[in-house]
Length: 275
Image (cartoon, rainbow, N blue to C red; front, side, top):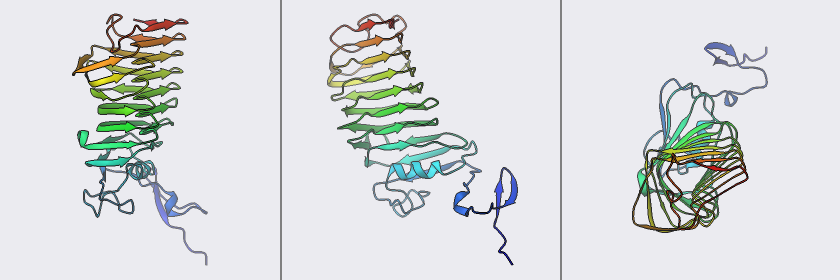
């Protein structure tokens, strides 16, 4: 007599597990908010569900991958990252049934390395807040997919060899208050129809902050809104203030030609508009 296949709940109904599938193929469906914890003294063999060394994960990527395996069912999901330094090259995954937030402990939570600190290349909704990023070979954030949406706030951008934020291919990025220090080719680069919005917040710059490619670049049908900003701190910015080209927009709400940080004039070309 053939063994009876296990029962599973799918879409509110209890059914037999389809032939050929295993219980590992069925997503856990959340019924309440959930938080996963990441600590430097954790382990990726833990469950991630307790803020202890015996319960927390050791890497942000493990927490991301775990959340990506769930049906979020519109429940709140948070990855809480403790103080300390964590590996870079974190890939934000596609999500089922909702969005997820990565939340650090301020400048004491450091994500650093040689790749993209956070990369989103799928249609999914994430937020990353309250931590510091630095990269010797990549960007702080790279968002490159239609339908990719990310909210970035309370980030301390250290030196980023690939720029602070790169957005492309019809992605959508919102930026809250943040801090900038160290070297980078640009702060924001948007191309191929990306939309980037940063309005009504304080941007704090510290020390000598060169932007050899321009503080903001908006290229190829992209739109960057960067206005009502309070620029704070003691700093010496160098490089062009902006570059707008190929029918893209950079909206400063009438901020004027010297509104953005830099020590040389910005440029517009091939239908680009600085407003």
